[in-house]
Structure formats: structure tokens, C-alpha cells
Image (cartoon, rainbow, N blue to C red; front, side, top):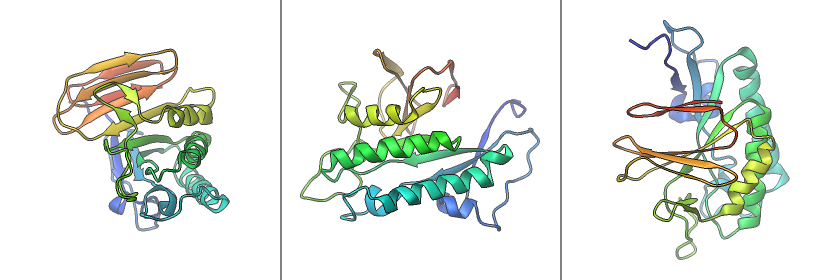
Length: 219
């Protein structure tokens, strides 16, 4: 088979970063060399990024928390040659666009600094309804292939600056075939794998290989 070439992403308990860094967590034995990747979800800090109503300001305390989590993941895994992927992240819409722009820039900048690839979760819900801030992680209009919040994408790309870095989006919906759209700053590829659509947004990435059910990215 392809075991010598494939990668396996391994989460800790409920994909929490601190669970993966616990002394009780151990990567499994693997017949392939250097093919295991730590997978975590990090909507950090939750009070700003996900909680309803939570906080609407992106504070210095929030910045310190993100830096602490990324630095710890780097020290525990990346610095020892084990890759880390944040399989889900994002900041829910709380009618606070300038604060989210600051979060996007800071979050992806610090992910890059620590050698971590971050994947932005997009569930298609982008408008605040009845002052409820829960689960508004919509960024990309699948029908129009346009951004609801283009300044958020710009903030993320500004944060990673020279862009030898991958910015990926994974979002949940059921229909559609492979599509792509390119403009001067980025390319979007979409591919239905039966349960999810996955879109990959990247800048200056070297190549993209598409399998029957997933994307394998080289960058």
C-alpha cells in the first residue's frame, strides 16, 4: 500500500491542545518514519473566538494566551521534528470586524512563527441573528465564490507576510464538484469528498496533488 508515503494526523482528547501536551498522551507506533502529525483544534481564546456572548475585544490577555499555546506546541512537538496542524480555528462574528481583523493577523502570524499550519473552519453561517454570536464562522460564499469578509483574509495573509505558508479553509456542505478560482493574491480549490467540501486557499505554494477523497499539499 501507500503506508510509506501517507501521513496520519493524531488528536489528543477532544482535540484540545493541552490534552495533546499532557504527559499521558503518546503518539502511537508507526511503520512509516516521521509520518505522524499532531492535530488540535484551537478557537483561542474561546471567550473571544467562540463564546456567546463572551468578549468582543481582542485584548492583550487574549494575545498572551495564543502566544502561550503556540509556543508550548512548538516546544513539545515542532522543535522535536513532529508536525502540528490546527485542524480547526476561527473567530465567530460578533459584529466586531476590526477586532476580528486583529485576531486573524495575530493568530496566523504566530502560527507561522511557531511552525504550525492553521486551518480555518467555515460552517457557512456569517450573519449575526437576533444578537446571537454563536457559531458564525462563515467566511466564503460558495455560490458566488466571493469572500464575506475579504479584510479577514487580507489580515491573515498580512500576518504570514512572505507567504511560504499555507492558509487552508475547511467548511461543511454537501453538494458540488471540484472548482477553482484565482485572482492576483490567492487560489481557491474546492473538492467534494462525500461528507465535506474542502477548500484550500494558498499563496506561493509549490504544488497541489488531489486524491480521490482529500487534498495532499506540498509547501
